[in-house]
Length: 383
Image (cartoon, rainbow, N blue to C red; front, side, top):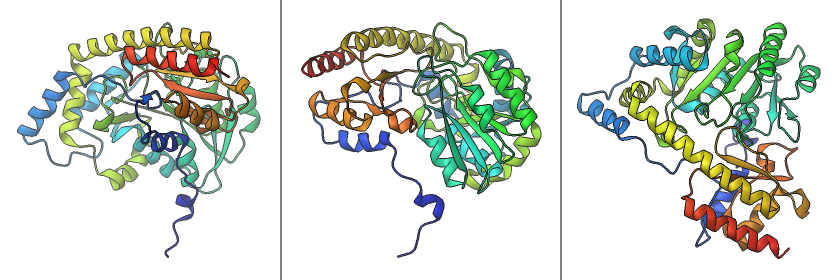
């Protein structure tokens, strides 16, 4: 049998996928494991895609993306993210995952160090290990999930090539403070490493405002975002990155080799999403609905005995289950079996988080959320 590449041999199914596989066999399941919105894509975006297909937008585009979309995105980043962006600093990607992959493939090689504050999405580690990096996980402060910048500073050395952050964070919903982001950006410039900032949940924020690290300086920063979460476009696979022109020009050949370009008609639909008032009203309305769900779910989880910090953004609750004397995978399997409620084990998000599980309140109707909480209360009350 032909041996797989060494990078591939390190990749295992994440706890997210393992739980999804187990969940297929469960009747009456309430799925609080998946991070995808229950809402449909706004009609103006769907109609824009249909028109684009009818008008022949079915060919390759420039690898960077169509100019109209890059102009619109640079304007959006200036106005919303407070980043001094230009169209030449925008690259349209096939989702944020492709943007992360292209960035790491361009800048990180075997033996380089990649720092990942945890908890974080498992893809950060998976792709970093695939390119041969030595991954160093740095746990955020337990309690408020803020970055531990002192620990990060102690670990940065001449081998450090990149650091990956996600803000608002999946799974904690944490929005990192501006002073921390400013300090991190200065550190990246002074120590000459990249900060790759995944900001896909940037519009799904509640009491606090979203903060982009590139607001404090775009040198040594790659900002990634897209349309999947806020616009309910997970299956469309469309995203974008911002960085200085030299970084974009370095990443462009890898992006071109991987995908050539994002699909033309989907770029046209993304342009509609950026410019359309109705679509932005959808984002605001669904974010308010996520806030209502958050308040309900967090109140019930804390009452049930699953302590959970109040998320500042995104649509997840990260709950402390350490008192139940099971590891996170065992606890998640237990809930799946006895309560028929799917969650994700905390070990999926970093080795220091085996005392937590993640619940998503994005893909479940409100009535089902109430039923899920009742089931948890009933089964955990028996323990």
